[in-house]
Amino acid sequence: MLTTPPLIDIHSHANRPSSGCRILSLDISAVVDALYLQSEIAEPNRYVSIGIHPWFIERQPVEQSWQTLQTLCIDPKVIAIGECGLDRCIDTPLTTQSEIFSRQIELSERIGKPLIIHCVRAFDELLGLRKMFKPIQTWIIHGVTGKPALAQQLIKHGCYLSFGKALLKPDNPVCQTLTTIPLERLFLETDAATDINIAQIYAAAAKILGLEIGVLSAELHRNFTRVFLHD
Ligand SMILES: [Zn+2]
Image 1 (cartoon, rainbow, N blue to C red):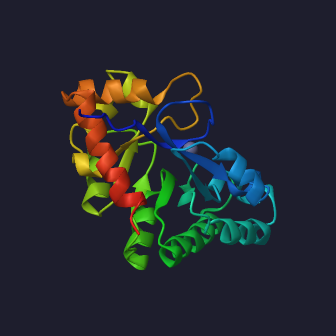
Image 2: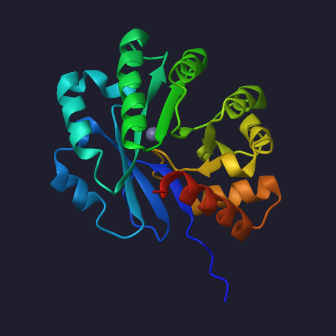
């Protein structure tokens, strides 16, 4: 008998019950210690990404965040670093953000775990860092919005893309963007939304792509295994 692979939520901030597989994203300033981490991921099919989000760089001394991140990132349930990245729409200077992001790029390479990236209006800088570091680890740009051109540029540079709630509005240009993404570079997510579940995002994506949900979930499960569960 064929079994349907679990629906994978690649990036979520809400640790609510769900039958699928989820990477819960925790900012390091909210991770108190290893014990806390374990309680968040006690269920099977639960994983964590931890990082220093650009919005929260100034929440606590950076060196404190950095020490905690380095200590906890080696836990096997932590399967990615992030979310981290660059955001032009916040007060923290982009140079500071870039320095903190660069440390996390280096960490990702050192420990062999992918990056989940938040990027707002700073894609030139992001691709500049990508050219500089030439990372081996996968970079997943989460929360893709907008038209196909930028998404195509990110794909050309080797990034994976993750789409979320925006797909639920059929007239959103991001629905057209989704149709231009190779399936082997695609992920789906709920991010910070508390009023939707990952099954709704899969249903919307499958409809836009003209695929059965089972076909889509099998493709994304393959992506998940390749990117996150390798040795
Ligand atoms: Zn997020």
